[in-house]
Image (cartoon, rainbow, N blue to C red; front, top):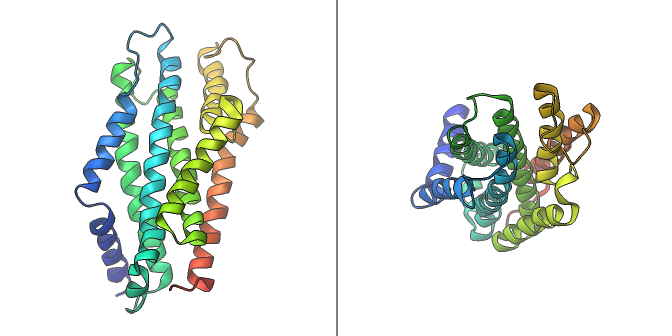
Length: 246
């Protein structure tokens, strides 16, 4: 019975926040993010072009992911939908997790495969190391964005404020820290490319910089994962045990 309720909540979330035209907008944003400002005649090596073109994907995916998660969590609280749902015999944990699973799986299932079009346009080997590293960087960015959006939604309970705060926070960090800091999206991908590019090809993708160490690369991967776990677990505990739904 509990399993049927949980699956029903996931289906409701899909119908509420991922039905047409929102689903079409999500797919279109992934295609546009992948192909916009793409320079087919760039003189850079293929995997270096892949790095630079990914910045737009990270930018748009962060905006879209933050908007969808804020709309689902903060928007449903502000509209009173959450209060109505909890008036039924539904556990708060089920409602929280169903929202997260439905949104995260669908957004990842759209953005990650669409991003793989770079295998064709860049002439990369399918499942080659650099495309896998790019997918890892995008996946880490999606994790970070959704956790920040959910955490802010729990505090503000306002859809508009949550969207703006999420976008401004993430974009502000990237703008201030630049492309070499592991706390920025481009910085994390830079560390992955620089380290593994040297390991796999024997040359640095970015020859004007020194190679990064294994510890720096590991930290670039662990940093968004730690933030994700802290914010999601904290939001889950707050939503299920302490938050009062008006």
